[in-house]
Image (spheres, rainbow, N blue to C red):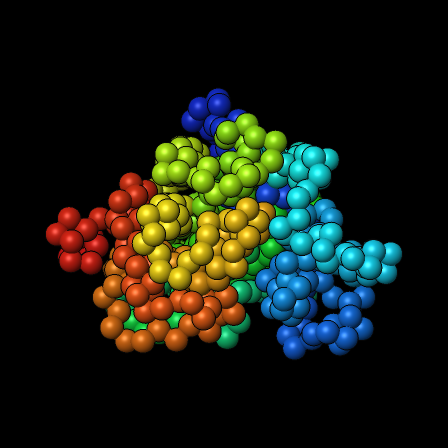
Length: 472
């Protein structure tokens, strides 16, 4: 353990262009929610369902994944209960919904996803989707508050973490505060993220296991805004909305152990400083790390913004290749601006091109080339096996695999098509009944295509042998 003391607080980064913040203010790479929530992030314990979960509702919150896993066929109700659209159902929201059910005997038919929504409801939903988070004025200062945990010694940071709560993780058994030195290019990875990154985090260990190694992870995750890089920086440091209440899981791991990479999920209105604060801290204790930013995928909120719509398109026929190309181009522009700003700190910042992968999948569905997949957006077409399962843009059954393949291909520079051993996926949303070996093979092909064709992935394959040129 090192005993270095940070002598100077991290300095605010200057932007390269005056319009960068305005450009990034349209970032909608995660669930279309409002300001980041301050609700508790403690997940509901596994195994609760039916009456048991109802009895304990007063003590628990649900994320959307936990709700759908727990409630089964009634998982679709989640958006109707989550009134403030922050990605969690609290005990209060749950109780309010129970009262609603008592007063509305036909509540299920009234709320079913296929039901026609009123103009007022559509307008309110669109407004929530376009809401831009606000941030503490402290982010505008040149220095963070003197009590920020990142300014303390590694020993002090570890002591603070050990006496507090544990940070939430999406990978459970694969998560630890340190790992021994790895061989053969295996990266020890720390990361933040929300439900959009959850699929990649949950499936990557299964993919790497089939490739011959265990993936070392230390994650501090959330849901929606609570998994954003700014939220986690404030929470870990015990500053701004978390003043005096730090949960320094990653700060402790980074300052007391060796790591080679960090992964982030994007959120609306992200600023370069949200990311460079993490980079500065990582580089102090682990110089030369790599940084990977997932660029999400098209959401209905983006469609409403980009095409100036008040609600969703009435039919999936709206989503032509040209529409997806426009959405993809706009996303590439936003993320390129963000990555280029971060690269003023280190040139080892890369994109995990999930946006290109999901866009390619959508185009292939339109051509009838995704066997078993029934639709694009479940809330529009009503098909269970759709690429996107809800209004916020969470991935439909099976598509967590595609996200995980993009993670693997980008981070390790190898095509998942080269993995010959069976991949035993264990995450709850990665093994739907319709997903065939044929479709899985297509997912692997799409992932590699998305990665090698993206200019910011850091991976190229000129000789098309499935191995990144930087590894040969």
